[in-house]
Image (cartoon, rainbow, N blue to C red; front, side, top):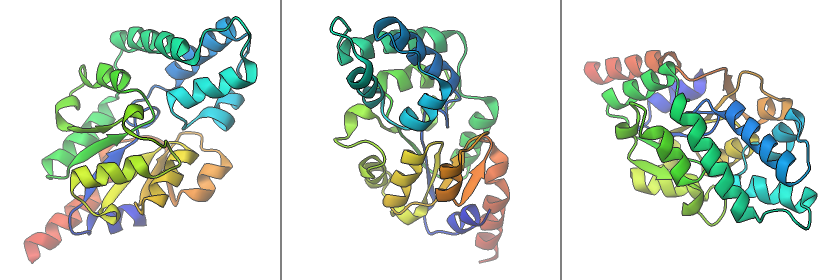
Length: 236
């Protein structure tokens, strides 16, 4: 992958992960939760196509606000009330099964072992992310988290990514981003960061804007490029 090879040769490489659907393999969980909330409280039966084309990549608040504006009833709970319900259901679901897969853990472990700092930039709420990280080996390895509450403008605006770059003390061009949605990839590109899209079933728009698409996270995505980086440094 040319984008990874180029990134591995930058002066001070770092990595930023999107959370939902990328570092955390939880999009099926989120779809189930949002579907149940919208069906029960808004009377809207959301399809998988609705979710993928209208909502994927938006922050939790934006997703609920979008559904509330289009399908809300006079007696519907407020956006904040629905957010609270969504948070409780998410914590219950991830308590039984952590959605960060073993290959994703191995990828983060490899990066940290190579002294490559790692951050998360997400439209999810901080408490949701921490509920997963606290029960995953990657939690102590990722000290920087930019969540929905930390930005004024969500993806596709680059604010979250640029904020993380400052905290990482890295130039944007030295930071490789892993994203799963069109708004996320657009945000990374607007921040000037190389990006790899993560999707087992990418839609045409994602393929069009992402130079590289992989089906899932694993250490194999960067291992060879990092080995070549180390070899060049040793030779130097």
